[in-house]
Image (cartoon, rainbow, N blue to C red):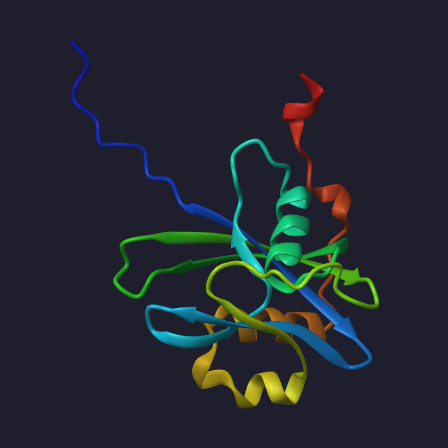
Amino acid sequence: MMPHSEPVWTPHATVAAVVERDGRFLMVREHTRHGIRLNQPAGHWEAGESLLDAVRREVLEESGFEFLPTALLGIYVSEKEDNSVTYLRLTFIGTVGDAPVHSDLDDGIIEAMWLTADEVMELRDIHRNPIVAQCLNDYLNGQRLDLTLVKDLRSLA
């Protein structure tokens, strides 16, 4: 008889996007259980999606813009305030079209907005979590990883 083992620990995988246009960054204001917060367009990776499809979907749902990923910014690990959930966030860099393709945003999203890096940092007290500032700083410091590093082997079967 096999000894009883604990359930396999599984982090919650999320995707996010850093989009800069003319010195401004695409951000979303959203309702959370902690009040109104500021975040990059982001959300959970859903079953059956590739990571790139997930980030395209999240940007569209939260901002109305179609997103074209061009690089991977980084992989970030954080925990919920009470340490009950660990998040694994893959943040992508990319571009969006000149105008939103629709204005029907996800539940909880108040608005999509364009802010300078200074404006984003001035609002640090309402960031969704510390990853918002970390991603912006990493982007401003020139961190970029080639998208070829993101491999979905499910499509090769």
